[in-house]
Amino acid sequence: MSPSAEMTLAAPAIAVTWPMRDKVAFVGVGTTRYGNFPETDSYGLGCEALSQALKDAGLKRDDIDGLIVNRIPSYERFAETMGIDPQYCLLTETPGRFSGVSMALAAQAIVSGAAKTVALVYGNNGRSVRMLYGGGDSQWSPWGMTSPGAIHAMMWRRHMHQFGTTHADLGAVSVAFRSHACLNPAAVMHGRSITLADHASARPVCEPLRLLDYCLINDGAVAWIMTSAERARDLQQPAVLLSGYARQDAFHYGSAPPDDFWLPSLTACRNVYARAGLGRDDIQGLGVYDNFSPTVMFSLEGLGFCKQGESGDFVRDGMLQLGKGRWPTNTSGGHLSDSYMQGWGLIAECVRQLRHECGERQIPDVQAMQYICATNIAQSAILRRAA
Amino acid sequence: MSLGTRPKPVIDNWNRAFWTACGEKQLILQRCLATGRCFFPPAPVSPFSGRPEWEWIRASGKGELWSFVVFHQNYFDGLKDELPYPVAMVKLDEGPYLLTNLDGMTASQARIGMRLSVRFPGGPEGFVLPQFGPAEPS
Image (cartoon, rainbow over all chains, first blue to last red; front, side, top):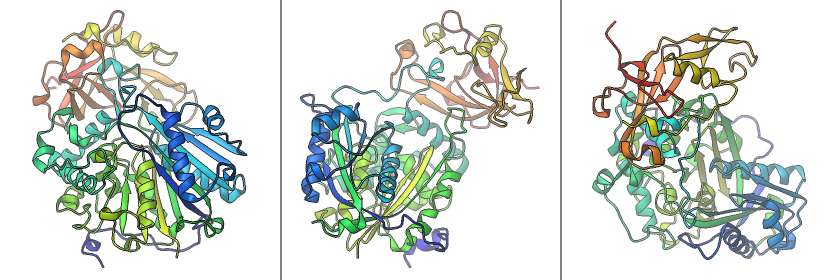
């Protein structure tokens, strides 16, 4: 038992076999460099990531009969550009919660026979086009309320009031992920370590949150290739199985920030363990959606890594930091210190960890990783290395 | 304060009555006829029954401060002069939450759980924005 086990709530018992368990595998991943690239766009970046993923998988464009495109404006134009005529194709919505949704759609397409091998391609040129995540007309714009960051700031202020957590508690999250970026030569913030004091004194963006609580907007792209576990056995990379995934939506907040930290819907996602046939103790590392540092806290509380209100104590001594804590999280640097690739990069990192190709940032002997996304479409997934 | 330069609300068939009432310095809410529960933003049906069976009621205009933030980043030209400005999340006594601003007090005086009441100090041309400040002791 890990030292943290006493602090965690019991994972649900493993009873029935979920029909999707271990049926689908990740067989290739590709990620571009992240930065400011006005000379290209989301199509150019998406093509680059997909080409990398195909090469990684040892597959050709003709092997792709399913295509899911995200954040690239047109699926038709992307398919035309890459010369792919699939039998299954769609464009998913732009928020980052749709990375996990896209993964589930691909898995369902493969298991149902709608497609054999699905390429999922995310491309974003938000930095070079100066994308501002806020402003514009909305229900709340007359009062100046806008931006996902402000929603999380509102939630964290309430959390501080209700449970006695602090802004400083978030520093452990930002510092841990930055330390991982310093081990990842490809991370945007590689070589730029930070301290808790840096986190506390960073410029305020929407108080109580400050700059180092926010993700990094960049241009870049990520691609995954998924196919059946059976076909994956014949391919060149160690197969990474999608063991289980779970989702619960909650849209009843009247367009305002939720008043429950998404706890009920995240709690419902704990059935990911039963679906995957794995318990929390079988998992060595995490990929947690970190558009803002509080999201990580809500995720840890919601999935039961600690009790509600105790996430500040839980992360304080490096619990999420590789080489220090039980739960190395976002080893690439995550959205906070690698780049905001809206969950796509986090899942690619889980795959690479499970293939044991992460060099200095490798989680020793990792066999299973868990992805968590705290939003109004709450999700969790467990990926494992095929035996 | 420069409420006159604020972004104008986006009017639709459901919220038009709300904004008209604000212009008359009244806060109104839709109330579900089946459950008696109020909801906001204005909508075609009650989320509690799924049916178009609701009525407008005049709200008490009172509530408690649920949470608040202070914007330092500029997203709207019309709010630039107000930076840094607070946005408050108020839980109305009738149940729904409103996102609003503080009037007659600063963010440093804000305490979560404090009682607040509505006031109507102004707004962009043609509109009045409800704002919230310290409730009068009742």
